[in-house]
Image (cartoon, rainbow, N blue to C red; front, side, top):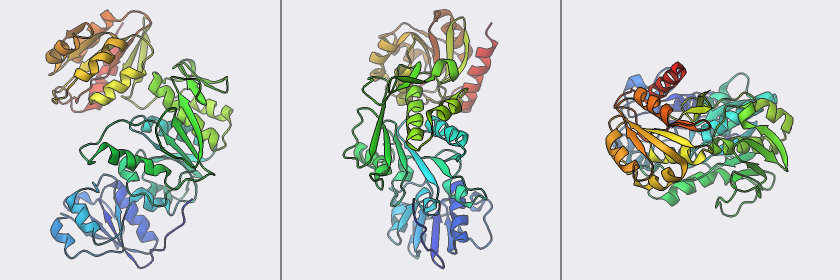
Length: 439
């Protein structure tokens, strides 16, 4: 639990006029501060703000020359490494919106971080907390900004707080009662100067935890010295506290959840997400019975290895959100059935050669489509039989003809959709509609 900071009469400058920034500004105003909101966009970016908040559109380096404030509150989308932010930060202390809001939240926090799987895990934790009568609103990097939670008329007793590296960069006092570390892989190198800097940002989730708190982590992750209780999960070894083969989840030799029979979660990565959520909520004091009941019938967010249907013994999964190579690799690694992969879309100049060994292990065939279809098929053919087609509809028909009973047709494009669609959502929705039309 954090302790409120006294900002009465102080100048709080909020950077970023999006939803999180506007919520932080309203919270600062409620706490008696003089508040200003700054954004590089025009006046139309500011939306509706309470009366009494000063606005500064078209923020530039020139504004930093005369700038002064007692505290800067940074929206999560603002790059702390940018020259613009650094120029303003030289004039005042800077914290993030989530850190700021946590100072006024008196409930319990289950914090979730990792390179992949955060959103699904956050949803699972929120679902369990709600079933346990604790509110459990998903917030932070996914769902509602924490500042909005604090401002609400019915503040929940506990929250599932998704924490990106961007939000964790500026953590000083935020202390989750339970922290979840899902995994780590290279990402966001357009923001961070090194992989180490990116990982160090994520590790700040543990900064204020102590012996009374708990860390839930994937077995084998290198996190350094932790001063908390540690609970592990794994899909590779039953030496971990929680284990899953992708079908069931066990703890202490007891089956807690049958993923295939009771949920729409598919793949080893979703088994990890479910184990992490279950372990965290048990550490929070919620009974296994409530946890298992809460997860029954759960389906993951759309476009994230979403099970569309099973037809002739073949599962069709929509992973349209896989718009980069790393996401495609994660989806393939998670599968425990033979895979017919559908990949392709806009040519972003990515190097797919590193994917070939995994293709050889995880797939029985592949179908490529879109702008990148032919060059991608030429490369993939070195590892697995691959067919190039033009459209997603053709890809589905071809994949169906190649998929035996007991296999999975996986749409995991590995690139963006803008050659044929207006976003990954439209691509995934189209896949869903076409699969439901199969007879």
